[in-house]
Length: 214
Image 1 (tube, rainbow, N blue to C red):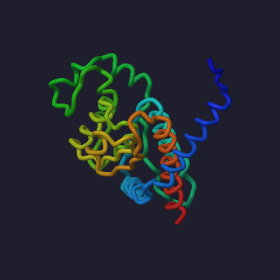
Image 2 (cartoon, rainbow, N blue to C red; image 1 turned 180 degrees about the vertical axis):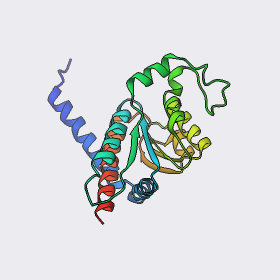
Image 3 (cartoon, rainbow, N blue to C red; image 1 turned 90 degrees about the horizontal axis):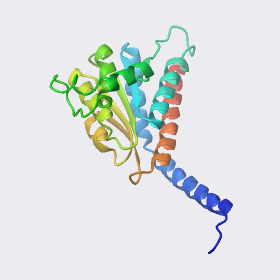
């Protein structure tokens, strides 16, 4: 039996990941990122609220993006309007909503499919705050998570502007959203997608800063 060299295996994988990530980075649709940046800026200028959400690694990116837009764009120029941006990351609310189950949503006029409470974890928060012309930013690798899809459907029902930052083939989220930033990969390439979504997050933030500086 041949003994594998863990260092050589790690080096091979690291180079492969780097090369794939660089290819995806070079292929990023900058026009789509500019389009979403403009949507977010216009929402800010109109005092609309921007809601950002995702699951797992995407949840972390959503929280970081909300913090950067909300705090990191302050103090650029006197009298500027501030981003009214929130990530749907209240742990107590998320877990309580999931624990309450699906029956609150089933048969209640909510669009989408609810098989258990977590399918409504974002809708349950949005219904307290979402108004017409607010902006939803859904971050999802697959674009098919039921709670993501349900939130976008709810947003469309309420007249919100919908944005999807997605990977793989974009999934349902891409088909439901007004604006889409896609990192196209094979299904299951979560590490690549989340890495590129972090780049997209920082590009959106840097675009926001640059617009404020003008």
